[in-house]
Image (cartoon, rainbow, N blue to C red; front, side, top):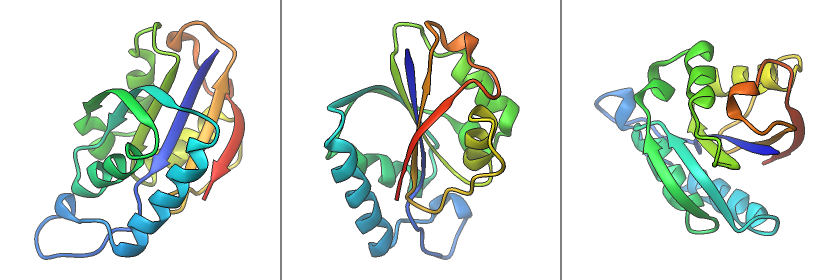
Length: 155
């Protein structure tokens, strides 16, 4: 059994400079704290996190990490600039000893990924929403479109 957590970054503000440098707003932080507290009630740790290196996703991951132990993490530029195919390739390359994986990313790709894996019509994750998918497989390589069971969306 594999468990995949898909988290859209919290609400971000607008600052001078690039989109990459946008920080979370106070509301965005509050939302992630609530999601973290709810998630903490059902799990203690996540084996691996892939996170976009953008400021708002890194801050989102840091706040979530105050509630749930994230054992290993990797910054992945492809989450910021990639497409659905790139995201599926990243999941496919996840080591099989990893049972739970968190991806902290951006719309529209994070919502497209959720919709594809759960074989649902388009599900739009709002800022700070966390989707939990389960897959009845032993290898991440066996995860394909429509193979996920959407267990919950925390908002």
